[in-house]
Image (tube, rainbow over all chains, first blue to last red; front, side, top):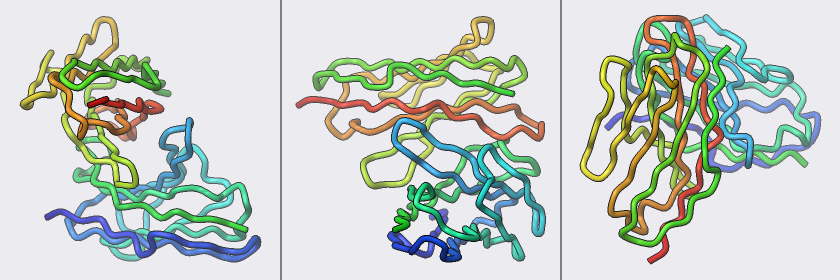
Length: 115
Length: 113
């Protein structure tokens, strides 16, 4: 079965901490994405990557960075966590040489609370 | 860029009734339209998709229709069951381009037994 695994289901971090959210896929997908999901706002794209060491900003990249050193792993980094970054974070991957050619496989999500 | 509007935001039906969720999009270059279902506390999962070269696609109790002229596509669920209760998201994207999917804001479907 195709899998996208996010390392943590729940995280509680303090304001100002550096936070790492990890995502691993075992499908050899080229494309990987990070979204945040908030009630009433749907899914908002933070960053995506369509190749190793490649990254592109999404709609809301401020306060975040990403790393893709290996094809299967895409990390989201909150450089200095703030309370407005409390959210559900979803990782996704898809096949294809460009994003959006195929449907996504999502991870289970990480619910991050910043206190 | 692409803009996807999804309606209604909440839909409440009785078990056995049909449910219809509609999405409109703005970019005429969009030609791939997936639908995702997210049950409470779970990950979104792709349930059906349609490409612009077809007008309708069915999979058991669910179907998706596409009207490219009017730029809208709809999800139809027949004979609804309580396990259909979830949030449904539509999306639109352009095949072969560098576009990424634009998602609708979601519809919360509640099926009452």
